[in-house]
Length: 468
Figure 1 (cartoon, rainbow, N blue to C red):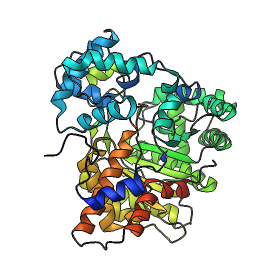
Figure 2: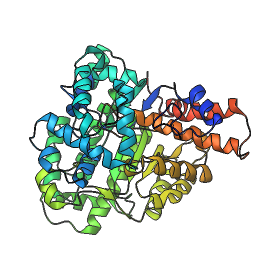
Figure 3: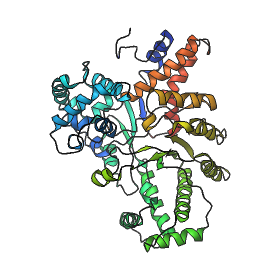
Figure 4: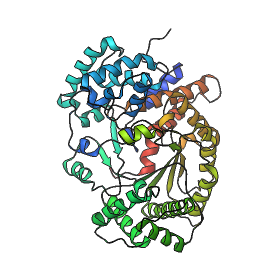
């Protein structure tokens, strides 16, 4: 029987161990999609305690605590920090076979050197030990990133953001490179016309231009697109239920925008056409600048209306949706590709039933101009765990070229989440190791090791082209 989280965790063969330790373990991390707060990185803060570093904003943990019968006052409420942590510690033993159990103990070990299992009886010691370390200079957020060999992080930023903290870090220097990501979801959220008009009013101020019609709106947004590019942005991201790719005329979109500005009711068909126009124009800009565009598809958000009204979005009430994906995605990519205006593109799906659909679709639009130009992205959100990552890797292997994959990301709001890259790398090496041990792949460790190192680091470095 193997020990829990020993040195060979997830590595089931000598070949897997060799691949991991010789080719994967020490590769730097390019985390090209996360939700880390730029101000905390630029200001190189220290967290007050382990609750602030580990539980605040982590809706993965919040969902588990709620499922374990923990009252909301210990999750997002006003209870003291240690009492919140104690409730999490009491929940952890009940997370067996949930990836949270692995992540929790990997993070305690990798950041704090704590080997004890977290439970109610060890909560005091672990909280005090980790919280004391978090006060030390070498546990500031930049040092936490350095401990994990993080070279690049790409934050997720609204077009209205001033990117002051990105400028600050670039000016001051630091242990990690931080680049913004252009995430214009709010700019096309036509479901709430009042909120969209408030957004447009703020855009007028930020872009310093009046917005009367749809052309004005595009002009102002493109102004912000230019601003992001001037501040080092090379990545865009879109969080959508599915791609919107309906046919429309320019006159139809002008009319729909007039209805938005006058806050008149908009039909479902008009909403789809407006979003289709927005996505198409944004994609053209991404291509013009040579950016990578990412599409996160399939989340069914804000399912619990009662708790949404109380706690707001991004608090743990989103789920996997079963949206139809293939036809609209094909229309969207083809419309751009036929005019040779399709940017480098990564497609993520949240429903594992669509893995093969996505992997096959991305292959339709690789044209030989760039290795892995259109990518089937890593296991995301509910799928960034052992089973989900394995299925994504296998679908990509079967339908495309795993060797050109740009690898893992955290998609996280926590500075303690970077052992997820280790988790992915161990799993990746074990899959290759099994195939070699079974005679399904040649015993060419040097070449296989190169492929693994590429997936872990070099492919992303080449694909994104960050100005280091």
